Image 1 (tube, rainbow, N blue to C red):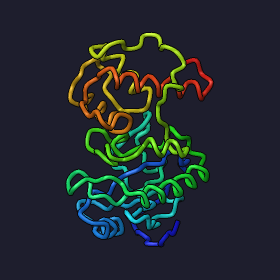
Image 2: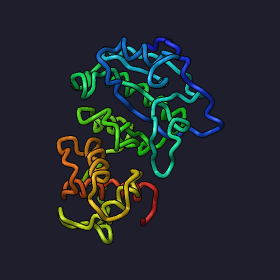
Image 3: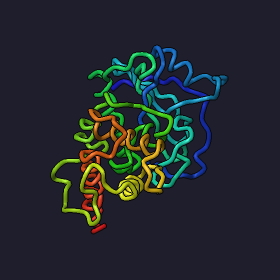
Image 4: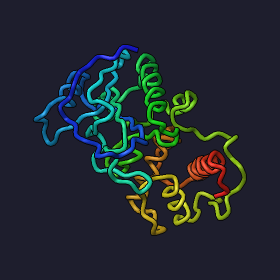
Length: 251
C-alpha cells in the first residue's frame, strides 16, 4: 500500500486522550480532488475539517494528519456516552460522491487499501473490533456515511469491526423483544447498551427512527426502514450476546 503525504493544517492536540475508536467516512463530494482540497483548506467554510487518512478509489492513500494529533472529522457526535469523538479516534475518509452526488459501491482497490491501513491502526492503538464505527453510528441524526453500500461484513472478516453471525447467539436474553411490535423501551435500552445515543422514553419518535436506521445501515444494509422489525431486533441481540461472550460477562 502506497501512502502519499498531503499534510493538512487542520488539527490540534488530543490533550492526552487515549485513541480507542477507528471512525470511517465517505467524502460525499463531487470529486476526490475537491474533497482533498477541503480536508486541507485552512479557510474552509462553513468550518475547517480534516481526517488522518483519505483513500482514493484506486487505492492510493493520503496521510493528512499524524495519528498522535486530533483531526476534525466527527463533528457533533457521541458513542457509549462519550462526546469528544475527535479526541479519541482515528478518522479515515473514503473517496466516494456519497448520497448527494451519486453514491456508488466502494471499489476493490479502495477496500484492499483500507483493510491494510485499518489493520495497522488497530494494532498500533489496541482498538477493539467493536470500536470500529461509521460516521452514521456516532452521528445518526445528521450523517449517513459510509452508508449501506459499504462492506462492513468483509471488514469484520479481516478482524476490523464486528459482524453478527449465528455463532454469536449464546442464548436468549432475558426480557428480549419477541415480535416486530415489541417493547420500544427495551429496544432503546439495547441500542443504548451497544453504544448509540438514543432516547430512553419508550417512544418510536423520529430521533429513535434515525438511530434504528443508522444501526440498519451498518448491520442490515438491505433494510433501511427505521422500524423495529424482528430482523433488526435479532441482529442487535446477536451483537450484544457476542460482546458479552467475548468479554466473559454473563450480562
